Length: 308
Image (tube, rainbow, N blue to C red; front, side, top):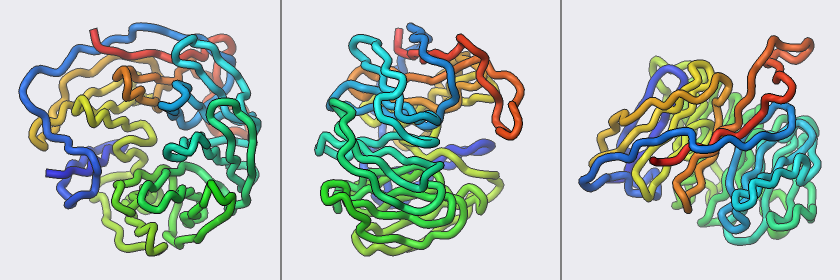
């Protein structure tokens, strides 16, 4: 059975939707490993958004106001501004091209750069409020979601916009199914929209009954799917926990709730090692006009979670 997993702020839905997710999430026998915070990597002060890992270069990329932060997973060396930007939400590897696309929420653009060097090779306008993005392997396009309800399809190799799909609502983080479809949460409408990228059209949407502001799809925005190990990781910034869910023959079961740190709401999975990296910091009151909590100086770090 193929499953698509949706985890949101106050509910979890696991449903069969054909081949909606490319990975088989059935689990054979054996017990799930026990996880712990095995390491802490201090970093420069500042807020953050999405974390992603480029498996080709063994780098973690983190979206920050001034640009893209880079963490070398082998050496633990941090480059605070690997690629400059403006209100960067995240940086997203583009298949096997060696390129990465980052979204500049404050400029309404995306930046294309080399993942190994940080060299910028292009910048494109995509409209106001670009947020999350996903590489769609069937077409080779990157679907960039905006807060104005549009999915902008970017041909990264050609450095051009290949189309726009009107979805409506406040779009955040998409997940590609691998068969041409991209799923995206519409936060202000409490629903999931489905985009047919080859056809460049919206195919359907479904409401998440009883859910408010859905913000996590398997493999994105605070929900991490380890398909090889048949595990789902759900960071909760409010409670300061990491919920670990095992998927056994299609049935999700919570196997561990690991204390982490309040504010650790997002993360990235290294599929090679199975480790989870959680950006974290001690939070203070908002500093107007910014409505978000402030970050206390000297407290930012990556929590590294691994099996024992």
